[in-house]
Image (cartoon, rainbow, N blue to C red):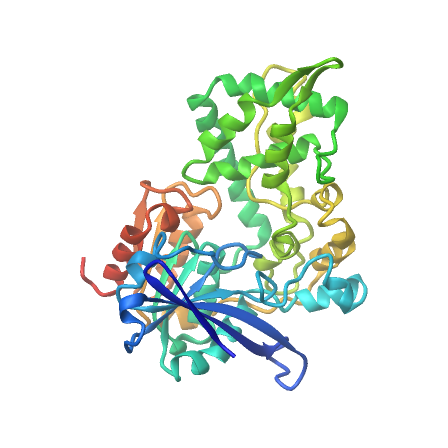
Length: 433
């Protein structure tokens, strides 16, 4: 049963679907998907084309917008929008420390999660599309990992698409996870250098916090163990438009005076817990590197192995001198599953995924080279999360893909830029500019 209700300027309808866990075995186990339909109030009864939104991540449910926020304002001018919680996220058969033990042990959990990558998400879309659109193709808007999914969609089922719009999400088509992280660490170092140039006082603040953590290693209120490596991973926010300012405000109020001497403030600890905990999106940590898996080569904790090639990120060594502590970016490490109580029970499952050697291909270069779907992509000039050079190389490999390369926005441009970003990309797919 579908349920409709209203928010300012929109009518919302909840949808639930069942799809095969393994699309190669359609008669086997099925899982549930949740999606929210959004249509402008004054167009609620109109015949409109559909746009399906694929959220970034992996591991995040679709945005819970209120009314016509961000890019929805532009999309609702001509589309009926479907905000899909990708499998394992949001209300779509969530995968976490509480639910995964239903699958069995670590090996069984890893086998289950192997079906939670872009190829399965695309086949989910194709399974529900006839029910949603009556069989008509729909447009796709893919943000970040959602853009990876959109490129997989163009590879697997382009007949299901009328248009593809991608923001900050053109993946490498054939690069291993090692290639991704080998390109990422220098980008992150540039972002950190830019932050310290903007806020030079943060150099000493970060060093002081890192020194304190090496001596004390506190446990945060929610049970998260704050190691120096975990502290460095706060750098993930530097890839957002306001990330440098948010990091600065966090660092400036880190310490308070207590009878026992300086201590990390409760306010600082609470904010750090919220930024670092994977409790709300554990699937991100579990399948992040698996999203790059293709063929027989395991990902094998790629970010951790490649980090060893960049010793400047070793905070303990940095503190023996007078250099700045470098923050890190978007990466998952073995220790991530030790420090976070939401992930600790899943450490063996993560090990199984890291060792896996039977990943199916996610992209079809020949099919992409023959693409006929109108497609446009926003590529951010120095995106911290997705390598610009990789994105440009992929753009050249997709026939007819038009790019908008910009330094006006960071990776969250489709949220920060809202209607203007989507309008620009839709115009490119229509050769209107």
